[in-house]
Image (cartoon, rainbow, N blue to C red; front, side):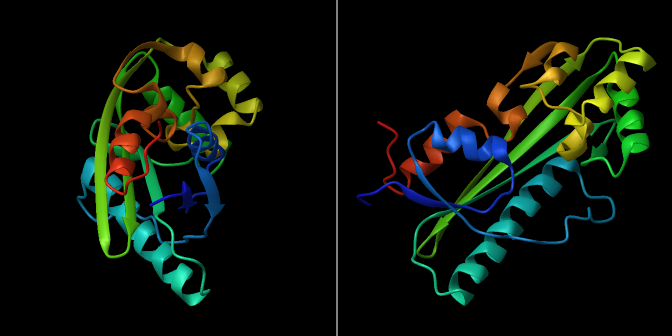
Length: 196
């Protein structure tokens, strides 16, 4: 493959920025699916399933809209604590409950990446562990007032204000942001999309 054009089927500005920083020529593609967890579904399985389903839907949209064929990248980030999946908060009260649950504890962040092109599909699942310091109710309310938690799994953004809560990170900073750059670059190589 000679160019670096790729479809990103995600509304995440963080994923867009991370991929742009790798020198890729990004094209936006929609991929709307039901992201409800299945009964007794584990967080890692859920995360990978959602990334794959988003990719299948994006492939169908590309074909239906008769768009040029380029690799399609989808991803999903899932925060989990005590086996419970924490998605994006529904409202400020939900965000408060999530942040209270994460306060002073270690949780897992799973990010799945799926890339498909011309009948070939590859995916990976990256796991990071994030430890929060103890948060006061006042800090949680002030953070929610910034609006930052409302569009993020687990109700925080590590790359912005939410980063001040992180005492320790084991894994990938960019994975917690929404796209593990190292693993994504390795997947892209399988489609002859070299970063360098």
